[in-house]
Length: 380
Picture 1 (cartoon, one colour):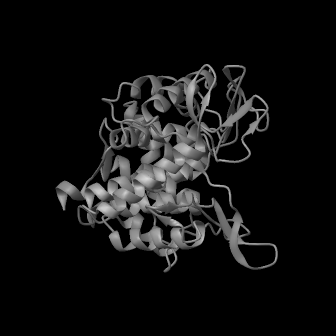
Picture 2 (picture 1 turned 60 degrees about the vertical axis):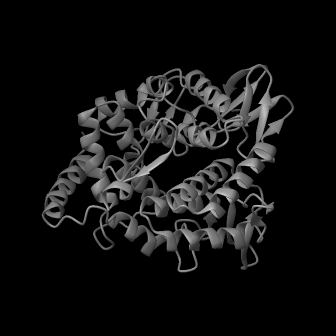
């Protein structure tokens, strides 16, 4: 184990022991409260301050909505939704007139703030539709459910295509991902619990077939057990992405996260995990995840940042890998530390830490139908 990793591990374990003595109430979520204080503006904008443009992405808004639902924080949920509606969908965001949110908003070259790229991001759109369906069910609010149907309908219309020899597949966005017979894809855009949840709400939709095809993509594009950031489909088969190659890094780390969060009763859960064994082997050998890996050769470089541990915690839990989970928990304690306790985690650190930490702490889980089961429904 590297000295830096060992020091982080030891320090975090001491901090965790101290924190346990003054444990928070069962459904209080300190890491979420810090996220809202440090990353979410008063108007409901999730800001990535690690970028020059101080950007907001539809991804950030969609993750924020999910965390607010897990925290039973309807006021923040409404603020996030309102900001998204006004700024990313140009106020065209209701059940009868829905415009998929622009994926990027921030400081433009002329110094003004606004939409920087009007293309939508399909992973964020999936998350928003899912968040709305679950919010409608959990908070018994039919307006959320109607909005979710409208959102999912536009996803099917604009972002799902039938690929020859395969069937339904999710484009990363409506524009710019098909050139000739090459279709570029992003494996991290397809969390299995979300696809199951949408299938449960819209059984006549393409979601079940999409889940099966996503599982095929993971199996084929991870020959050494490592997911790629990007892949492509050409001539009736999955191939290496012509633009980004076979690298697996900051996008792909979410593939392990979503696999770890999938209900064990889901028939695709085990095959999905089995296809991703390379990351487990790397951590077992080195004590840390690689920052980047070649999915074809398995050659790894660098040490993954803190955020990777947030993503990998549910993965290790699902694999019953106690050593890997122990390492991940120690790093999660660092991610969840209050401001002033060391390096300030950036946006991506915080969101992956909330996903992974919230899951392994039992604050939420998904059932085999993809329904969100937050702790507050039973414990608070």
